Length: 173
Image (cartoon, rainbow, N blue to C red):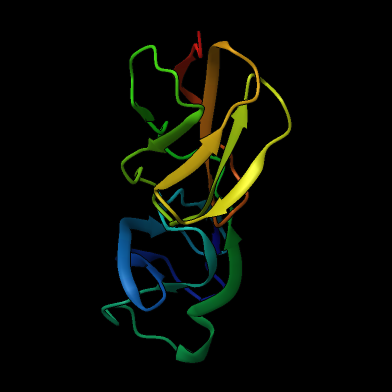
C-alpha cells in the first residue's frame, strides 16, 4: 500500500491498520517526510469468498491534519481457494473374497477450510458418480475379480481431492 504525505510538514511516527471485514488483521508503524511516499506491506490471511479490506493511516489520530477524511481506503476483494480437500479413506464391506456382488463402501468426512459440497466415486477408473454429501454407497460389480473403488471429495470452490482407494473381491465360484 502506498502512503503519501500531502501535508506541510514531516509526519512523525504513526500507525497504519489493516482490517478484513472490520476485524484487525495487521498493523505497521512508520514516519513520513513532507511530500514523500512510502510503501507498506501487510500480511493478509482470509477465508475463501468476498471480503471488505480497509486500511486506515494515522489510526490513532496522532498527527494534526487539516483533512482527516483522506486517511481511510476500502475495497472489496475476492480471496480464492486453491487448496484441495483431504483425501477420503474408503473401506469396503465385506473386505474379503466373497460370492456376493454387493458391497458397501464407506468413508469418514474429510476436512476442508471452506466445506465439502460432494463426494464422487469411480469403479476401476471408470466415470465418476456424484454421491452428494453421503458418506457411504452400495455398489454391485458385474465381473468376478478384484475391483478398485476410488472416492474423492470436492469443496465449495471446486477443488477436487486426490482419490482414496479400497478394493472389493468378488468370486462366485
